[in-house]
Amino acid sequence: MLKIGKILGTHGLKGELKIRSYSDFSDQRFVVGNVIYIDQNPFVIQTVRMHKGNYLVSFKDMQDINLVEKYIGLFVYGSKDDIELDEGEYFYEDLIGCDVYNYQNYLGKVIEISNNGAHDILVIKTNEKKVSIPYVDAFIKNEDIDNQRIDVELIKGFVDED
Image (cartoon, rainbow, N blue to C red; front, side):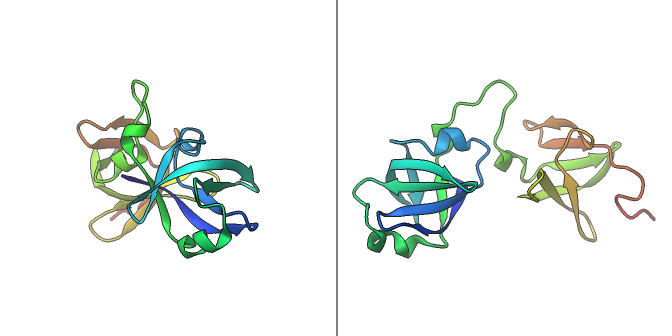
């Protein structure tokens, strides 16, 4: 299971939940008829629409605010098997644990992926600290998911040097 979003609140009285998507495949995840999971319980999407950058989703047999309020603040999960990946595509979750090399010098391991609103950020745990690297072509030069390796080229001063 992959974390694909977070329930931010309700919308209206008919059981719609406002969900912020964390998925890089949102258009395939949040579709009428798909199953998503909250607290390991499956829910079938009855309706879905966009509103101010978030998804408004209601579930089958749950069209009442009183039935869904308890889910506010919880994460939403989806199955990896629900998404067909093209050649060379992978889930961001697959980057967690990859070794990162800067100009062939070992930097650390990916421990997290976040988003700053403009783009995704790889959070790398080095020997001494955490380093955040924008997940953009300017810095990311090669990703070898099978061998758990990411090569980056960082500008001088990006990482403290001895």
